[in-house]
Amino acid sequence: MSKLADTDNTDFVIALGDNFYGTANASDHGVSSVQDSKWTYDWLEIYNGTRMNELVWYALPGNHDWYQNITAQIEYSKVNERWYFPDFFYTKSFTVDGSKVDFVFISTDLIYFGYDGSASSGYQGGNGTATKNNMKDNFVKLGWTKENDTLNKQLQWINNTLYRSDADYLIVASHYDAVTCNGTIPNMQPLVDILTFNNVSAYMYGHAHELGYKKQENTLFLQSGAGGRSESCTNTNGTSISTASWITSKVYGYANVHLNATLANVDFYNQTNGLLQSIQFGPRPKRDQGPILFPSSASYYGMFALIVLLFQ
Image (tube, rainbow, N blue to C red; front, top):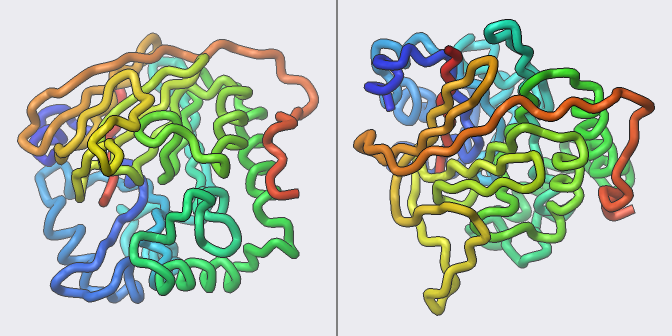
């Protein structure tokens, strides 16, 4: 990845969550503070190529990041300007060859797991009750509660932000999977409806540790979750559970995006920079900007994943 960044003169990196797992240097997941040794051992000393040392990383959280001090990853943005994680929901806009590109970064942990930190599929954070409770405790500390109707407010913020965008490319980044490896769990369906309703160009995510994609209506669902772990997209009996147009399992890798005014090209690479697959998407269909609407189905409850971006 560092070699490709040098060759392509990469513009920035998107870290799609699960930024820090437990390691030999720190026994828990996530980070404890802005002084945690993982900032050095698991980030600065690993991604240290010539160009990589200059790049800004636009970050968002995954479930493993919630099991310790989640706000420390936001606070670290003030320590190192190359780590850009100002809030749980934020936007960045760029102009490429006269075309506007809007990125919307969203923390979908509450949407995926619900208020108690456990998704409807029964998943409890990978390490059972303890991690589930850590996530729930962090939700409560932030005021992300049912009493505050936080989940609906987050979905409304996402929809309103996307609806107001007049960008030629509208790209959403999050941690949690939809459409490809595991299909779409019920908790995520309202978000998928919002993405397709607003003609989002691409939804980029990780969580499941594969590389893959699927085009659904005008939106490319782009999975890049194999940066720190690889696994198979199959049931325990060995049968595939993939709904993707293309997916690869048991491979470490990442996605590299080249974007210009007329086309975005996505290349999937393995850990030795071998090209596995490519897919393209173009500027999104424009829509009249009227009063903000909200899909009726989007009313809710009443391993390190990497994307490398290059503009050219």
